[in-house]
Length: 201
Image (cartoon, rainbow, N blue to C red; front, side, top):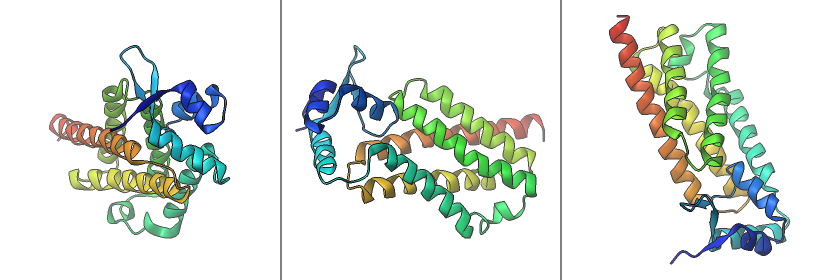
């Protein structure tokens, strides 16, 4: 059975100031549950794993997310992006726009995690609209628009999970939330693309 503890109790177990735990939560690094009153509650098992990790002198939580960002850049730089057929159809400006989209997706995901999903529908819709309108602008098909998004979504999630796994800290709850949020974006993308296609055949 999962036991939830307060922010202060979590800070005591890890051995840091409560404001540090709050910062980790706001950055989407340490998963937290929000009570109806808006208070943060943490799974004891997650907190104890963090404490064990800290005692071993592993990566700092902020460094985990920096590592994830580096992983995304490496995967893109290694030619995985250039190998995508939809990407090969784009000119230099369009390719630059899609590289930047990885950053906007990462930022949106971090906002979603740090706010515990508040306004997730509007945030997901906005990112989905961005991907759909860009795909239409550069004459990508319906399927190619989805493939472009899925490339960046999967690269980002795999990079975050890899960083957490290397640091030996829990990520199951965050993984589920990342998939839920990015699924919302994909649905929005497809709906928006269809609307744009119908209004501008």
